[in-house]
Length: 71
Image (tube, rainbow, N blue to C red; front, top):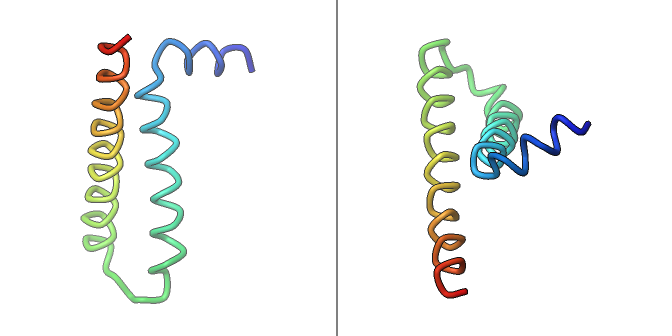
């Protein structure tokens, strides 16, 4: 547990990205499991979901940088 805490403190953006990406992939799977996508379509959706999670964390990082600059 201390390893996870240390990783979170040393790499907050990467940790947030991993958690958000996994959560979004789980939601994607449960939302679209009965649609009948082919494996290629699942792959494209998964990649797009991970990229979206990365963009979200990147944008949230802007807010953190701005608040640190003001202090």
